[in-house]
Length: 266
Image (cartoon, rainbow, N blue to C red; front, side, top):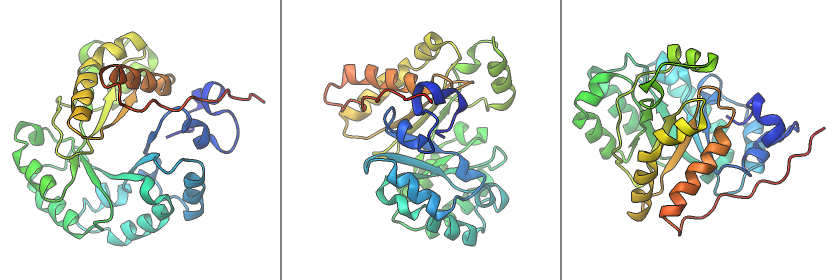
């Protein structure tokens, strides 16, 4: 996601190459739109042209595969998707398998068989929302470890710790899942999704645990990717840079983020 309306003036400008502007602020992006529709291969080629080789795309698999077929099929749609995103090459940091809240441990075999058959050229990361996985995580962890796949936690605990105070927060309150906190990494490439509040100070207060965890992972030789969200996401890129700075204060060897160029307004 790099075409947020609120970012145009401050971050990406109004040009057709908004991803290029976003990549000057952050070094990774969630490919959430691929959940709803597979992009044209030419479009993906333009994404590659707008980003450096070490930029990280975490691309969500199509909804038809994860929610329609519930991983028990949909391989023709998956092949079409993989062909479309191929131009990103090594920029594909992980393929993101977000499963519906109704997908529980009873369907674990479908996940295991799906991971058995997907191309091994890619890294996979799974986001589950069924509470039973968090109550008894051992089975899912075993399946993921066997395939070198990561478990993506979506930390909404800070967001749901107090009642909403804005329209965007009220909307998120009704739509976002109330997920249990999970802070365990299974691979050397953990991925964290964190939802804060519209108040930047409260957002930063809630992510402090992740600052320490990310620093620990880096010192262990892992390479975490952290996505910072707020209900309106207006300040998300700046907040992501602030999070990175706090981690870098604990891990001085961590490379700084790129310095954004001034945005030309037309």
